[in-house]
Image (cartoon, rainbow, N blue to C red; front, side, top):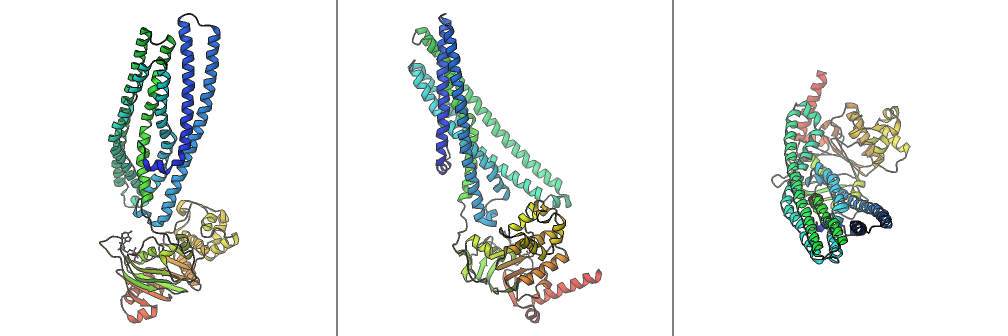
Length: 576
Ligand SMILES: Nc1ncnc2c1ncn2[C@@H]1O[C@H](COP(=O)(O)OP(=O)(O)OP(=O)(O)O)[C@@H](O)[C@H]1O
């Protein structure tokens, strides 16, 4: 009936639940009181002894009952809101912090769409779970017992018969639950699959249009949507059927109680007032459990969502170190081996070190493992063997925050957030002043453009959609400059940008290298000729290393690739 772990995790929510049950119980007692008064009036009206004062009494009782119900309903909704808020904010925080601890590697465990669905829809399900289902569960146990005692004081036989019929509702719920569990797991699976496809199609819409593949993808999504519709309909049918069964039990049980009380009246075992009261109250024995049954799909959805959330929260995350700061900024790779999958080794005993100041360039053919090296440096992946050090300290011993202060990575697709230029720059350094922000924009030749468009408050659309590729990259670079870390990684930061932007970025790389340790990855070898050290990689190994002049003199693979690129560039220049 309950998700054990969820209940344990949110033990503190039980005080709100207790409050909600108490207010519901108070409303029940108020109802009982009113019905008993009304039953008394009806019976005295039936035997002709009713007085005007009795009618007045009824209205006074009714007014009191309405007041009690109003206050109870208000308190109940406040408590329900407090319980929901507590669950919602805590779970979202737990999921968010977990994803943050995974850093970029969370995608190894779940897709982005799944992460979004868990933190939105999944959490909403749990909100209703605690705000409605759990209190209703306890109330639906308490209410029949309370009524049993009250009716029992009038006639024990009727009370016992009514009470015996009550468990038939939970029995039918349990029967449906067994069947529903599998179905709801499938429902969630299909739902996240559809979310995945939708997100992917939306993000790749331009590409799909270019290759006229949008229709094929639309068809694929139609099929998935149809699958989701079918499973949703099955869930709804199951819910409707279970509600019909519960109605049958509830109203059948109440009818039995009513028939029995009429029989008792005939035998003189109950008074007319008691008989009227039992007739009016019989349904109340069953209604709380019937209501619980209709919240039952909430519980099942909540259980399924909780399973997904806890699965994510239980996923083993990379261990966090304790080092926050270190003096040096030299990076050392010692015999690093790494593979994403057991079938293919991506890095094979890679060893190299960078200089305290200056540029270390990583070059090589596509897929040789350059970006993998940077992902290990950012702790997005962990090497299977070997050791990486930064400033003499083992990299895995750094806290993520400490490491992020030490290293700034600029990729070819740096993320620009919706908001203002100021907000995007402040991510680099929260305390940066306006003159510092302007200086950084000036360094990347973006100040003029930003000033013309509203200054630091210039609006930026999602993913920097109102900026050109080069402007986006230069804004990302300005943000990186404000971060002012001792190590900078430029991972193909100049690909997909115009020549002016490329030249500007390369100028900044040279400037930074005077004080910082810079790792430069570039497919264009002309960009790395001034590097202090060039590491030429081939199939996950460092095949050659040295300065440009040394590697050219060796006349091996690096020299061959460089000459080939030069030839191509001259050919292009001549063609222009
Ligand atoms: N997440 C991943 N899962 C499995 N294999 C991966 C993953 N990322 C990269 N690879 C594989 O690892 C190898 C090295 O990839 P990496 O991105 O490091 O190469 P690269 O040298 O940076 O290539 P490029 O110059 O084209 O960017 C490639 O063969 C690639 O297929």
